[in-house]
Image 1 (cartoon, helix red, strand yellow):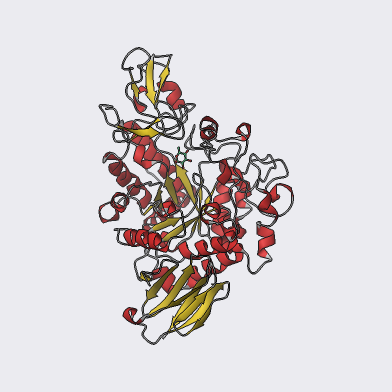
Image 2: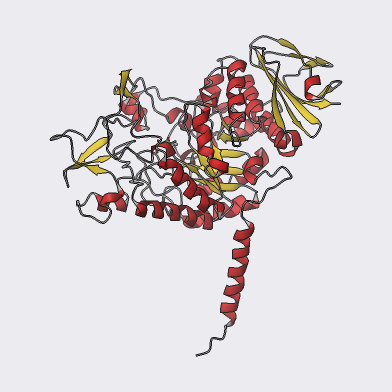
Length: 568
Ligand code: GLC
């Protein structure tokens, strides 16, 4: 039988050749002469999908809501959005308990809505990053349902099952980070299963090659659907000691009332890095980026996440920066210098869905807006990629529950009142002054704080001095100024306890950033000769409030910020 191509098979062949050459071309092409990749020039923005925009007015945000805000995001200066898990889930941990890795939770829409969101994103030059939860699934995931059904089930070894030490006694002393033993006895088979987080989040067994394969394939599936990368959840917890040895117990108890413990035998195993290298290989097929939820104790640990020759995560987040919880130039200088000296590209965040908003953490209660602007001007002008948290750009504040019965986040209920949970930093985005901050016509799943009347997109768009307009100006500069995109970072006046200042320089041109982190006016003198700008003068590009200067002497008002061009 001879094979004669039909018109449709010819078209298919052409399409295949075209898409193959597209994905080959997609492989990690630098975007500039410095060899930088797209994610090094991009500004990322984290979206908690329950809380961003509610298109169907059921009180919970959704993907069509996100699609409807793409022009807002683009005009703000956002290039990529990371959406926390939007997959089918019983929502015990608000999506971080995934019941199907290849679909969308009906509460957020469906796959067609997802495709529409990708298309809207492309139209507005906003890439989509999803959240990949490799450590655990939901207990409602069919894999776990099968796994718990019998000791010989096909998926039994996909999770971590063990006999107790003695009748009713867990296999070891490991504590779940969300409270109580990390082991739950399942009566169906009379064995315990392991969960680093809630009992409804059983840990996958990454030592089983079938688990590894299905998870790697899962990321490829989404890349082929138009996703530009993943934020990897809780990567340090993927592996446990095969012998399940007890963890060392430390003094005192935590907020959940459990003994403090050093998670020596259930976190940070070297095997994590093997998995990251494999995930990276798949990501590289699509020029995708991997962002890590990398809580590390020091820069050496953070450095390891980049991998040898940069073959693991391109963007491990530097959470040590977020632990500088005061406006302290010396501490920020130390932290930035440490990360700047690591072997990869720095990644800066000041807020996310697990920590109190930066507006509250840095604010002094009186000058919060000025401080919010200062912090924006700070981390958006450093050498590295910033990841914003939705609402940060309008000075959104935490709205913590005041009564236990209002708490939605389970750790806030078990840990009340010491631990109020994470609801406060997850409230609806504040769009305007209409009821529910314009997020939804129905009462939202969490209430916005009363300050939405002043801190919202509509009101702030009209005010040239708003936090929002300061963010817009800084982001616009960041996208166009070569010193901010490519330049070196040099700390200046390093003994100054009040003013954080630095130079970003590239090819003989430079920007000076000076941030008064104190409540009193500060006069500073800059000597830029060692940086090759001996007779330079400064020209204001962005200042808030107005800075006054005389050649290289600058006076900044309390919490004042200045971004100036250094003119030779
Ligand atoms: C990560 C998420 C957090 C979640 C946990 C368990 O830390 O950021 O929100 O509760 O993982 O998946």
